[in-house]
Amino acid sequence: MTVKELIAALQAMPQDSEVVMFDGPSQYTPCKVYVADWGGKGIKGNVVID
Image (cartoon, rainbow, N blue to C red):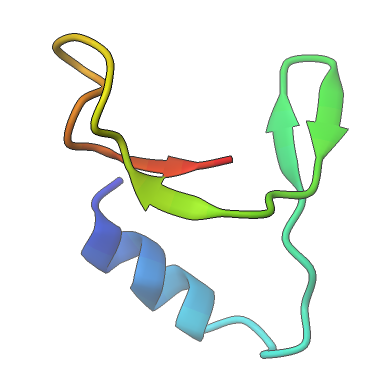
C-alpha cells in the first residue's frame, strides 16, 4: 500500500474512529507515523506506523 492509498482509505473512515493495528496474534494502537531513516533495503525511506 502506498502513502496515497493509505491516506485515501483513512479519509473514507469516520473521523473519530480509532486505529488498531494487528501484528500476528497481538494488537496495538499506533502512536506515531514517520519515515524510517534506519535499517536496510526495504525499511529505510518507508513510512512506519508504530
